[in-house]
Length: 176
Ligand SMILES: [Zn+2]
Image (cartoon, rainbow, N blue to C red; front, side, top):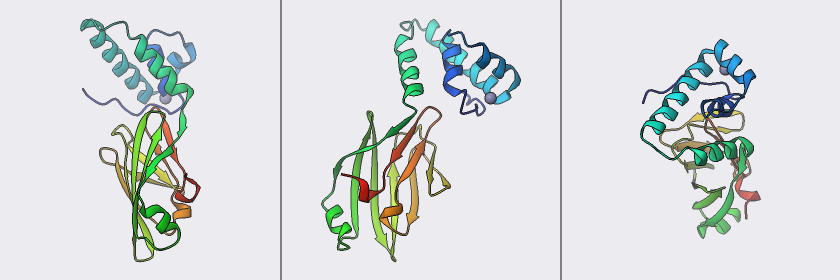
């Protein structure tokens, strides 16, 4: 399916709800004037139509899911598990470790490797997360994978972004 143009952040969920049949005159008016949002609305309507033709259950589950996204737009990821290297890395003794985090059901894996006095960070997130923000910079991802370098673990916190949701991953020192 063709990707629609970029909708505005403030309207992305509201337009999905419009496509699902919810009344939102302001969002509809906005979509008439804004090309990105209009394409997004058309795309969402096409998806709903395909769902209807394929006789999926009325997409209540999808409605709930989208409402859930809208309500919990920013989710803070909680560490589930970390490799043994973490404690050592905090003491300056280890050079590599991994942390597995849960963000309201979505899994994020982060691997940290010390190299030339900096930390190289590799992030693996669900593919819908297309970009990552760290220290005011945006890093583009590929299939949910991101790489960046930080001077210290204190600066290793970042935010993953998808059209629906953001996941906030705290810096390592704060975790646990
Ligand atoms: Zn717009």
